[in-house]
Image (tube, rainbow, N blue to C red; front, side, top):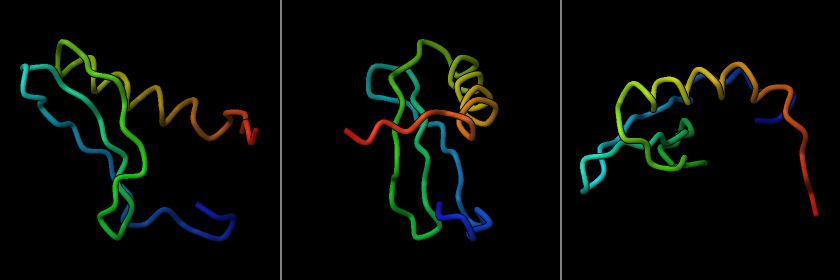
Length: 65
């Protein structure tokens, strides 16, 4: 998001993979997937990943190499 965006319409989605595991997608307001996590054995682990992203993401360093 840019500095002036509010984040309205952005969302996390928990998706079941074909092998029964789960992953998280971060989806923009236009429906485009912006990021996808690794797969997790349980849905609870995917939910924990979302909470970690919410908590740690805003302060994360940007590596623009």
